Length: 159
Figure 1 (tube, one colour):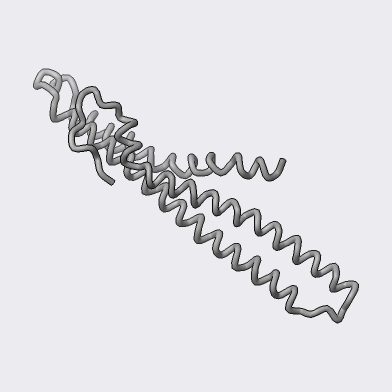
Figure 2 (cartoon, rainbow, N blue to C red; figure 1 turned 135 degrees about the vertical axis):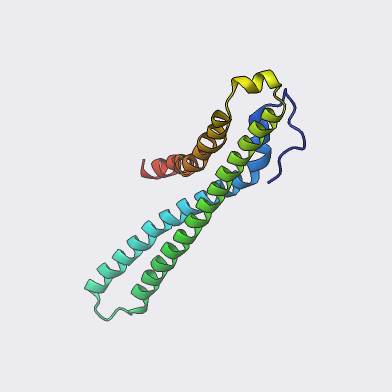
């Protein structure tokens, strides 16, 4: 992640944030879409397994490999879904860290440009609080944003 070389007084912070976290957010969203697709494939595998069990009741001589095939497919799909979801969470947390770093860098740069009269009005504790506590909240909110991105896909599937 790279912060623009110089944050000028007219620079809008969201442009700097988007330039820094664009790849992380897009990768996280793409992995969320893959995770949703894997979630939906689990439903298909369960339905196929139930259908195989129903045919097994009618024909006890049905081959066992059919049931094993759907069971292994379901297990592999769930394992792959867990790995993809964890990797999506990694990208989203990385985006949160990058946002925090951009905010901290812009606050630090702004405090360096303050005049001595302005520095007398703002205590060091206020600046540290804004840099640490407030910027840290972006890391905590990013998984919730990831869930909001995947919500329309799940609602669309259910409806």
